[in-house]
Length: 326
Image (cartoon, rainbow, N blue to C red; front, side, top):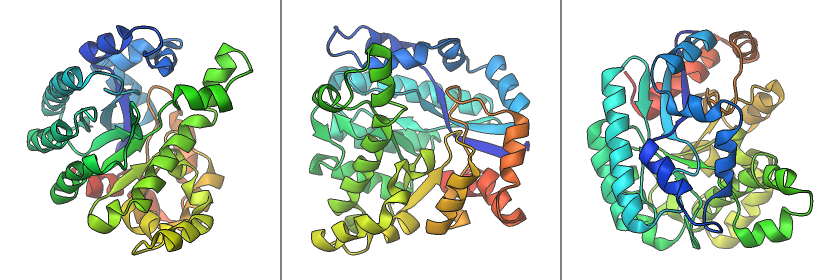
């Protein structure tokens, strides 16, 4: 159990969090409310003894940290560039101080695509492993050609790109995720459904745009057992044929996408994932602190994997390979 590496484990950097909350009403990301539920805010901010005690209680040896959603999304290009750099410096310092317990993904300022590519290269030099991105920055979607330099850097440096769920745009929320009351509307638009459609669609659009054809070494990570794409891969293969892609969507999922559990330790999800992809493409994570599986739940789930080799790969081996953890 001490060999467990969680690859979707969140933290907050005070300067980024303050800037996000200072956004005027109407532009502030409403999913920030989920970071304040119960003691979540305190646990996100704690990157010291309290977090390590929680890891020990779960049997998690290492966390690969990433900024809690919405990351640096919603900030101006100038603010995002400065604050992403500061957050990455802080993350690198933390990982350097506790190399046996933490690694971290880079935060990149997607509001400034050129700076995002440059910051990923700089962060890689600091020892950060990969980056966490979101499917939309303002009205600009992740598959926009202006991000191609970012994919080129990620592919060249072998930096995995984790596409994290994001709250839908205001217009989509008004048409599809409203009418049930403020709390239920937010839940429907985020963890109940909307988040996962947004992330899965962002990944599917990258494939359809030909990003994985131009950068075949690029590796993506999807949480929540593939953000619904694993359940729709055969239907989406028809899209690949119409778009004239080099490979099918199923092949991209099997060759360029890694799947993590995000704390959803459901054997039914595991068995379906292994019906589509292979044991060397799935990764453990708890989605700390938003999910809190107990040590006993984690141990029981590991028993659902088909054999000891698959258990070792899921628990830590695949994470070591993908993120270059020695």
